[in-house]
Length: 113
Length: 110
Image 1: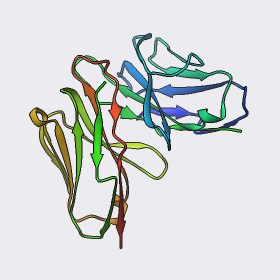
Image 2 (image 1 turned 135 degrees about the vertical axis):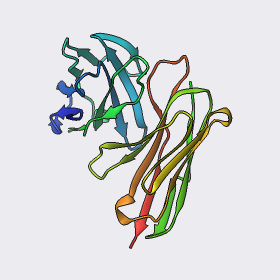
Image 3 (image 1 turned 60 degrees about the vertical axis):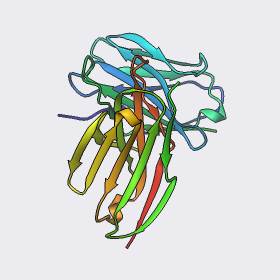
């Protein structure tokens, strides 16, 4: 069974631009979560989607948004990029219900210049 | 919200040595996972262990939920074990997000 995939793997943008990252969960998994990892703040939760609905949201500004499609694939969007948005963005999926184990993709490394 | 503390922050070993990594958490949990982050950034699942003991080869983990801690044991360490180990929890009755500790950076020297 294929793991969680994320595209693109690397991205370079300039301040003020926007970016869209994509995540395909493990087949059969209905929950997708996004995390940001930076050297200063560590791993922080952005949001979680389940059956196309955002269930939880972390403490990030409204510039960070996401969505989930009917096939469980998810995208996250960051608008008006700032230098501090440079980070590794990790997507995780889990089956949902009583199955709580999360599995992570390889991440998208975003650099904002 | 729930707090997660990992210790030690850094650990340097010689190949073949054993080690114990600790994770303390501040509230009851639904989920506790141990991960190893590889040099490319991917989090590799080691254990899903909200309670009890599990073993996988040279690695084993124990979570004592009533005392709010988990231990990860690495025996006969190899240079490929180097990297950062994270503990993450998802609190009972909480939001189902994982809250991560700051990690333990393990360096295994040949």
